[in-house]
Each structure stands twice: as structure tokens, then as C-alpha cells.
Image 1 (cartoon, one colour):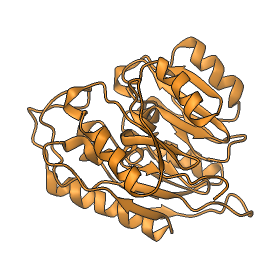
Image 2 (cartoon, one colour):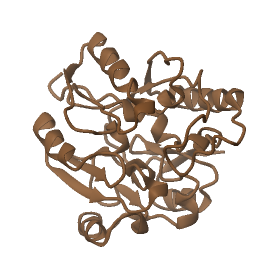
Image 3 (cartoon, one colour):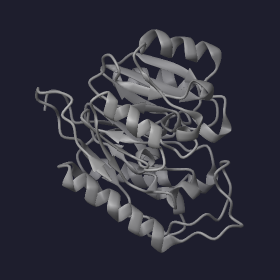
Image 4 (spheres, one colour):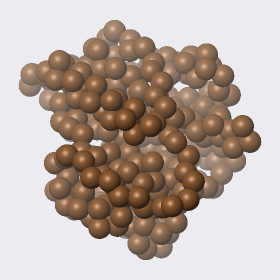
Length: 283
């Protein structure tokens, strides 16, 4: 299902993103509450759903690059965790769990081959899963995966303000499962979030910085509705997040529903499959 609405009349930057085909996707271990290896995973269905997401991005005019999947690394489809790219600088990921450890170097090698300035991470961080840019400010999650000291490292690498947010619900183990960037340029109404996924102090920060945010429901967050991707005008989201889609339309966003329910068995959704490649501002 698809609706469109032009939220802004001015120029906007077309997203350039990196994706990884789920050739080897399955759920063979458990490192988050969504994963149940005892249940059957339909890899063919995951591939079809991913293909639809890829085609949707191309239809929206996004530039889409692909990294080759590695055999034996079923979570590599979740490209957002592979690093963070801002201003042409690629800060590599260092995964907390050994099951995903080889993904960091694989994405780092792709960054280097494609002319990005690679900065090797020293602290545990899981890329854009926990590092999201809104306007000129980085919002960084911690609590389950990314180490808090990585937030200071991100500030040094990118030369930007980093605001730390503490996650408290293990279902929302990465920031991008509980906090969505709707308008990358920032400003009023530029994000959506689930308050209960954060501790009290972080909720205060979010209320202060984003008084006009879209407040997601528990039902919509529980189908990874907040794990969406937006170019500032159109939000690609899970079809199961019906109230969220209605709220977005009310705010003037276009919406495109893409089902990634099979990939959700691994704990990821649309944003998890999408790593944004932000070029140097002077390029």
C-alpha cells in the first residue's frame, strides 16, 4: 500500500544507501529476544521481501549500493549495523557478539574500496543501529549493544555533538528499533520514538529536544514500526504499524508500506537493512 504527500517544497538530498542481500539469512542462534532458532526461517520469503524493499528504494529514486554477503553470517543483511557514514567518513563497527564479528571488517573493506575515509573503531559500537543523525546532531543509543565510551569516540571521529540515550527494554536493543528519523534535516516533528524504551533521563532529553515528535504506540513498536527509513518526505515502513502510518500521513509525510516480517525473525526491519552513505558536505 502506498500514499504520497509532499511535505516540503524546497530542495532535498536524495539518499544514497548500502544494502546486503539476505542470501544466507536464517536464525541459527539467539542474541536478541526476537530470535528463535527452534522455529523455521523461510529464506526465500526473506529474499522476496528484501527484493521488494530494494525495488521500492530504486522506485523512490534512491541510490542503492550493494555489499556482498558472507556465507555463515546470516545477520549481514542488517547493513545499518555495519558502520556509520557521515561527511564521507566511515566509522567501522565493532560487534558485541562473536556471531557477527566478521561483519565489521567486511563492511570496512567495502568502505575503503569505495573511496570513503575509514576510521577504525576502538570501542564496541553497532553502526547506525545505535548512531542516528538528526540535523547536525548525533543521537547515540546504549544499554544493550553499543558501549557508552563509543559515544565520545563518535564525537571525536565526526566532530559533532553526540547525545546519549539509554535503552532499557531488551526488545528494543538498538536505538533504531525505538527511535526513527523522519526528517534528516532536523527541526520540529523530525523524529518518532517509543518513550518506554528509554530510561527517565533519556525521555526528558527527548521531550526537550523534540517536543513535536511522533509518539509511537507499543503495538506499532512491537512490529518494528519505528525501524523505518525516510528521505524527509516519504517514510518506508512496516505495514503492520497501522497507527504509525496514519500519524505520519497526518503530519504530511508520504508513506510506503513494505513487509519485512520474515527478516523481523532476526530482530531487524527496514532501517536495519539500510545503511545511509552521507557524502562529504564539501563534495
